[in-house]
Length: 309
Figure 1 (cartoon, one colour):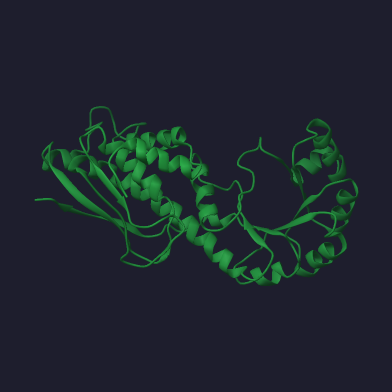
Figure 2: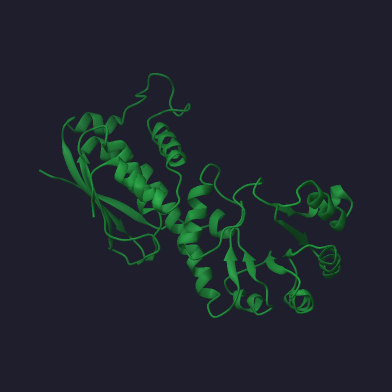
């Protein structure tokens, strides 16, 4: 399908549950940063201009570009990159965008992902913003897919955390879903996660659980435990979602065998692709992997630009 209006891209984003207004803020701030905003440049030093493009390209010149995968992986963020391009180009004249892949596709080196045409200055102005977003999101999706593949033929699912780039959590968690993972809470206001510092402050894991349940009767609560004893205590108190933090495989297996019919269990800490199957065979329902967002390497994608002349 050929997209020629910003509203069409916005509908595409809404269809995959991405907040258009939030994305507009992300793209606008990124463009502002690239044009010398937020203190990037001293006052008066080319602020507000792509100096190189302004000096070398006529204001009415048009061009074509192709987003190309430079390495294999799972692509995510095609509608996001398209939105960035459409946002920049729609104010500079007509544009066209064609998506040649879908989020979640496994792509190969050399695959064309998006082709676009529009005002040359606008395309170059938005190039790095669009690439930064799609390479980051595709990196997250690729890292997540690696965990999904490692857990194949088990009942354990990979789940993310709040260890995300500030301001980009919506996009990174979307990319986790595209990679086949499951989102944990989006924010501190979505659900309770009682961790070690809460336990210390409340005087114990059971008092912490009761305090949250009393204050928020209907909110989901997950409780982090560091020993089999804590797990037994808090499940007896009524907790039904338990995070097993930095436990050994035998410890996790014993807890799940004893309490698995009363709660769901998530493993966290010391997890690697190499031990994913071993951990999954303990019977835990989830593995919590912060690395799929905070340490995922970007997937190499480039914009090959060619003048229409």
